[in-house]
Length: 170
Image 1 (cartoon, rainbow, N blue to C red):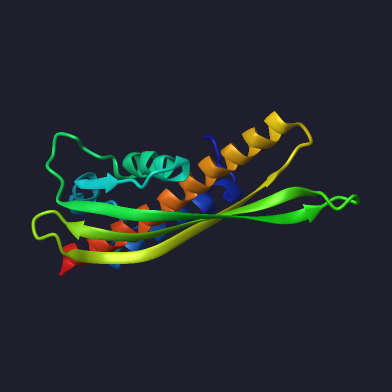
Image 2 (tube, one colour):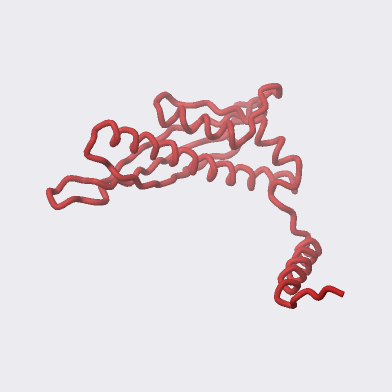
């Protein structure tokens, strides 16, 4: 007969009890109801001009899992504000570390009525190092824009998914 050490079986038993406890309280994952997934995939993203606007649209389309075969129920319209701050300064007073803040002022518009159903402001901040070589500095700045757009899209996705899930319960 093979014996299992108590230190290995206790964590598994604890997780099983916790899972049953959460199910008993009526816990439902955010993406549990299909209304959230369908609601997000029916949102058409309308991007403003510029690199940051384009990057955010790409990330939002991925986050919403946009289904091009479905007529959009809503339009997501936004503007992007980008600010860069010097955060690290070398001895010769030249900045070598920056913070990039990307802020989206957005509104969700019902496609049928044209009325705003939700609006908000969401922002994300990332930092990056600036190299002495011009190309490396540009590449670092562009990478920071992409990372900030990814984080911003994730935050917007969570906010809209929470709103859709709350709306579907009502």
